[in-house]
Structure formats: C-alpha cells, structure tokens
Figure: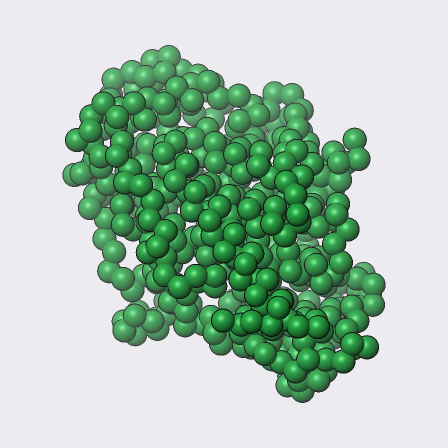
Length: 481
C-alpha cells in the first residue's frame, strides 16, 4: 500500500501541480527542480504548448533543455564533470553545497526558459521571486552560484537556439518564414485529408478539439530529423526494417495488420484504455515515472539532476532518429488503411466514446481510441521514447525495479468521461521492462499504430537509451566530446 499511496500523491501532483508563491523555498534543504522549476513549467506546457502533453517534439525539447541546464549548472560543483555546453571553473569542495546547486539550477532554468518560452517571462520572473531570488541579477561571475547558473543556462540556450529545430524561425535559409518551429524542409504529404492517393503513405487526418472547429493535420516539425542530437552524430545510422505490411501491394500482410488493430479495438478493456491514456501524456508517463523513481530511491539533488537529464536526453535523441525514419517511410496510419480496405462495409470494433463494441460499424466511421498524432505512422514515437527512458533508467539506477502503481478512479477517462473505467483500478509497473512493454502495446490498444511500428520503435529507443547514458557518464568523467 505504501507504493500505491505514493503513486496517488504523484498523480495529484501531475494533474494540479502549480507554483505556490506563499511557500518559502529552502535552498539549503530543498530540491529546486521538483519544488521550484517543475511546478512552474508544467502548467505552461499544458496551458500553451500542448494541452495533453502529447506533442512530443516540443514537450521533449523543453524538458531536455531545462534538465540540460540543471546538469551544466551543477557540473562545476562535481569533482570531474563538465557541462554539455559549458566548461565553467571547478569550484572548491567546500562550495559544493546544495544551497549553491539550487541557486545555480534556478538561474540556469530561468535563462533557458526565457529562450524557449519568452512570452512567459512574467512566470519565470515570479518563479525566481518566489524562491527569494532576483530575476534582474544577470551576474556572469563564474565563481558564484548566480553567475554559474546564468552562464550555464545562457550556454545551453545559445547552443540550442539554432540547432536545426528552427526555434527562432530563421533556419534553413527561408528567413521570410519567421514562425518559430516552422518546417523549412519543404515536406508535403502524398495524400490529402480528402483523398487517399497512395494507400501505403501517410494521410493527414481531419481532427477537432470540439466546439465545431476542425483542422487538417500537418506533419509536426519534420525538421526534427535535422536537429542536433547529444549522444550520437548522425540519425541515419538507426535505420529500422522496411515496414513491409504497410505497403498496400502486399495485400495479405496489409490486411492482416489492419485486422489486428480492429480485433484489439473490439476487445478493449478498461485497463488497456486507461493505460493508453496514461502513455499519451508524456509528462504523466515519462516525467512522473522518473519523479516517482527518484523519490522512492531517495536520490540526492545531484543524482536527481543527472537522472532527469539522462532520461530526457535519451527520449530527445530518440525522437530525432525516429523522425528521420518517419520522414523516410511516410507510412500509412491504421485509420486510413482500414477505410481503404473496407470502405463503408461493416466491421466489429470500438464504436466511439461510450459506445462500447459495435458489431455493424461502417469501417469509414471507425476511429482510434486515442487521437491520431500529427505525423506518419512508422516507427512508433511513443514506444521508442518509453524504451529509451526505460533503458536509461535501468542503466542509471542499476536495476530493473520500478514498483509504480497508479490508482485510477472510476469514470476519470479523458476519452470516455464518466464511463471508463467502470470501477476503480490500478495501472501497475513492477519493472521498467513492464513499463516499456505496456507503453508500446498501448499504442496498438489506442488504435494509432501497427505492431511492427511498436517493435521497430522500441529497438531504436533501447539503443539510444544506452548511448545517452554513456554520453552522460563521459560528461561526468570530464570528457565533453
């Protein structure tokens, strides 16, 4: 029951975490990442970046650059470590206090957040003021925690503002389009939302957030494949197997993988539905599994920073390789394949929110349990992120144990509110291996991926999770390249 209660507290934190200015932060005994920075960043991500925290490219960019700034900010207080983008003077052993680390972490976060999300400067100012610090202190003294934090954060921001992601809207030689994160690669889908010209290729879906407002999907940040990774040089080395069954000319295999999605859809359990919803939210799944592990294992402030950085970096670097493969194959999503195969003919599948399984559902009306993401199908990004996260966790923590049990109250589904689950249940991950496996399968349960896509994504994630760990260990040993 101790694990269950701890998980319940974390889910409350995940759903309602926000800054509490009235509570003083103790730099001597507190942990700035979890008590100052995260409570301010999470509401901004949900409020103005991704309402469901499912838009992985930008969510992972924010979490990785922020945790990178933490790592670089405390590297000078480590006996040998260097930052990923800064090599500040080694501080005397007596200066290696949590008070100094906390101050450096907060100022480094402030500099990176103002680079990533400058429109929220008032929030970042309030974050510092709430911690008893001065947001106008721009000291660059490399021998004080404020100066170290500012320098570390500025170095990370400077290195990443033009790293291929088009954060400032001026990369790729197309300076007339100054929209942050706009595509500069010239990607265009083969299919339109209204016509499936090539049933092997990705078709943008018509999606809605309600209120009668619809939009046609665009491949979100296809330039992610051109973004600079941390732990390897070239994403081209992570080539996945050709998605044979997604080629419509292989008719039998094409139909078989589509039928598997329909069969799973027809037999969804409440546990599968809620697990799919959990992993669709990258903060609740990736972020809070790491927070749970760090709390239950009693990680020090320094260890917390290292662990958060390596897991975020692992997923970030994996995303770059996965986007390279998504662009290369531009593969069809299940919803397009199913409609192509069966048209208006009846199928047996989940009928939509609150409808349960429907025996005579026109295939053209079939929809996945989860909303389909704004990018091609193969390989699965979510499966790859979880695999990278799990592998980095196993390596850093030294074993496979997780012990995370997440209680879910009846009727709390976001897809089927008031209906699912019919009774309280618990989502349990005794090990990181189970976490990784269920995360991957949740994409099949959610109807947004084929099985081959999940398997391919996990293989890439596992490999890059190991590379991310090796890279961080090099930084800790004092090797920056």
